[in-house]
Amino acid sequence: MRNRTVGLEEGRRQLPQLAELAHSGQGSLLTKHGKPYAAIVAPDVLLNARRRSSFLALRGTGKGLWGKATSHVAKLRDEWD
Image (tube, rainbow, N blue to C red; front, side, top):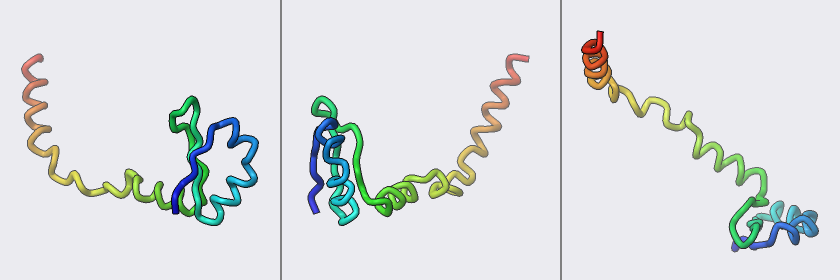
C-alpha cells in the first residue's frame, strides 16, 4: 500500500483519520516545509523497525576484530611513557 504525504498542519487537523489509516495498514508521512518530518504508522511497523535496527542484532559480529589492533595501540601508547 502506498503511504500518504501530508503537511504537518494538515496532519494535526486530520490526526484521527490518519491514525485510523495507520491502523488499517496505510502509513502517513508528515512533512514540514516540504521535507519529511515524522510518520504515523501502525505500532507493529514501528516495533519491527526497531527490532531490525537494534544494536543487539549486531551482537557478536566484532569477535576478534580488535585483538591485534589493541596490542598495536598499547605499543603506541607505551612510546609516550
